[in-house]
Length: 89
Image 1 (cartoon, one colour):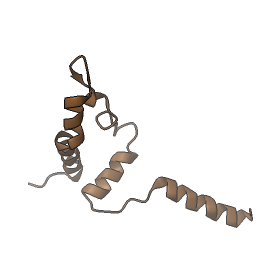
Image 2 (image 1 turned 90 degrees about the horizontal axis):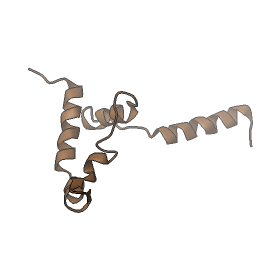
Image 3 (image 1 turned 90 degrees about the vertical axis):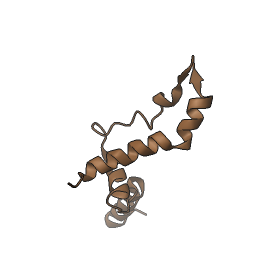
């Protein structure tokens, strides 16, 4: 039985979250009234339903072993090409 590639990505991400040194540091040293603030970090709060780009990138890198083109760099290249086409200095 093969595992769905998206399930593989989810498991890998959750395993990484569970084992990361950052979690250990937060659990020991960053808390408020004995509640670890780890649960309030952006790593835990990631939303792959309403903003799926980060999760798609993670899936491409971790599961499919693809390189991900930075969206900012892609936008910059498009902007440069557009300026050349339109004749901006």
